[in-house]
Structure formats: C-alpha cells, structure tokens
Length: 271
Image (cartoon, rainbow, N blue to C red; front, side, top):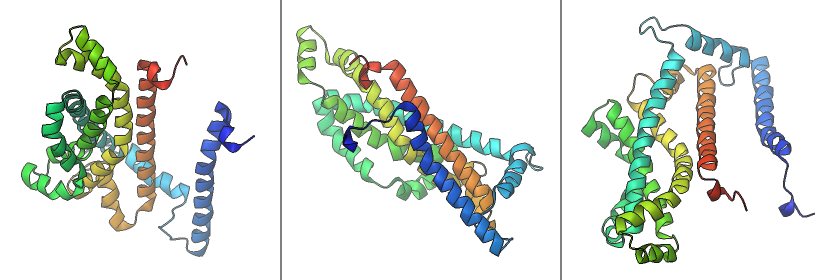
C-alpha cells in the first residue's frame, strides 16, 4: 500500500503526534545534562529541577510589592488583552467581510483599502500606536486588532464572494433583499470559515501581544519574558514559552471543537 493511502487510527495518531515532541524533550535533557556536567552554573539550558524551583516562586508566592501571584497575574493580563483584541478583530472581520463579499460596490470602494492595511507590517505601526494611544492597554489591544483583522476581513470577504452565484439568484427570485441575502445566505456559510480564520489568526495575535507587552507593560507573559532575559533566567523563560504554547494549543482545540459541534456540515459530517 502506498503511503499516500495510509491513514493512522486515532490511537496511532496520538502516539505519532507525541513522538517528535518527546524526542525534542529528550534531546533537550541530554544537552542540558552535558552542559551542567561541564559547568554546573550553566544558565542557558537549565535542568528541570531549577525550572521547577524558579516557577514555584512565581506560582505560589505572592509578590512583596503587589501582593499578586506573578505567574497567574501575567497569564490573566495577557489573556484579557488577547481576548479583547481577537474579539474586536473577529467581529469587525465578520461585518466587513460580509459587506465586501456580498456587495460589489462596497468591495470596489473599500477592498483596496483593506488590502493596503493588511500588507503593512503591524509591528512597524507600534511606535505610532504608542504615541497616539499612549502606553496603556488601548495600544496593545489596537496592535492585535490591526495585526489580524485586515487579513481576517480579506479571507471572509473572499469566501463569501466565492459562494455559488446560484444561491444569490435563487434568494433574489424569492424576493430577498441585499440585507436578507447577507444574513440568511452568506452569514451561515461564513461562520465556519470565521472560526477557521480565528484559528489561523491565533499565532500572529500572540506575536503582536508579546511584542507590545515587551515594549511597554508592567505585567503579562511577554513582559515577564523580556524582563528576566537580562538576567539570562532561562529557567523562567522556557516554562513561560511552553505555557504560551499550551494556551495557544488549548485555544485552537476549543475553536476546532466549537466549529465541529456548531457546524458539522462544514466538516463533511454525514458524507
């Protein structure tokens, strides 16, 4: 049997997916042990024990100045910024995407503007945002929105514009207005695509969040990583990076599950 025709069973997929991660962990442990054998004070590749000790203080000991548990305060702050930014970006992408996809005059007028904004590197706008909006939460959220919303708008607009023309014609034959076509024909078919687009936007959204927190913040996962890097505190940086990866994976899994539960027809269910 050719490899292209081989499909792993569920249990095998879990094992095969975990295998490369396990090999990377083993490789890290091997290199860390070697470095510490040569230099017990090595900070570049900390051993698991030192990472546990460093994280225990951030997890379970309240900060003397703020009284907060640093790790959980960082996580909550970052998730709030990410949630607000992604929420605004998703809502705007849905509204603008529907308008661009369904209404050709709107697409001809505002499509080029969305395209121009989408190709501007958002990080280049960060100084402008900080100058215009200050160093508070607004600028950080705005960077996430500007970074992911235009790309999401283009994707939703293209998906809606590609809907079979026969559906639009039939809806008009039945007396549907442009508004009704947008809500009853385009919107239901755009929702699964919107969740898929959100999944694709998660990675860039995290990048913009970490960048904003690293430059101007006093709490957050990105802020903590760039704060401790001056001390070469890899025993904090590595767990924080791993935690960000775990959060991103969980968010992606939730969006995937929500899409499959809410829109099974979009995933080939019943075929």
